Image (cartoon, rainbow, N blue to C red; front, side):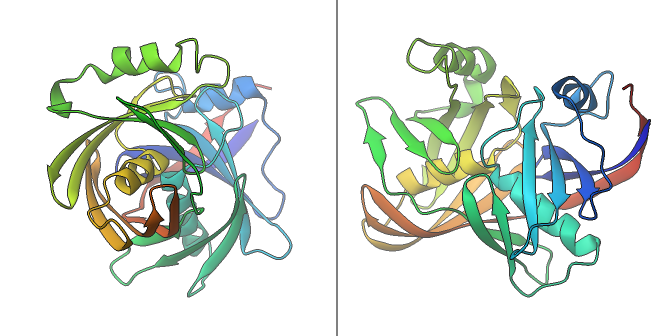
Length: 262
């Protein structure tokens, strides 16, 4: 069968998108989704999303990792899906959609920047050399020096498949502080099982932990290998973060049709 697809990216974090708003997209198997995301034999992407209709919301975000399995929240994916919804004729000053981790708001600025409201964080697990925090997806965050030289693929895989995390998996972020309000983040993503050029929930997790104000408003600029993002939020205390917004570009790449084996 032939299926119509769209390709988007948010700072290099790329996605195949299917329009299922009118229930026209086919039901795909894990194997088919994995094939579509394969960079050698398929379209190539870090994940696949479906834009679906949901009563009471502008749309529903259904997200699958590159391994073909349905996954937890993807921040850059959410921003790309908002831009796709706009391109498909859903025009709102403020979008309200539902994802696996709950309700989200988003808006598109005049310059095309998409700002996505993430879920509040009410628990942070601090350790001596790393921190565990869930920003819609679980993240291991380690602050270090000279992030550019870290072998993220091998080091991230070692942590992700360690005894503590092997069963459920975890995303692994290596973070370098560049100045008082800027960080550099590299992420190993579970489900992709490799480093991605950017990870929205990972960037958010790192930014919260890099707050330059102990309480109140923070705006952290984030450098990734795929581009630049900003995270704005209110820090209540070390365990609680509210009004979290992930802001950055979301770009259309191309569209087409692909023959998919049943």
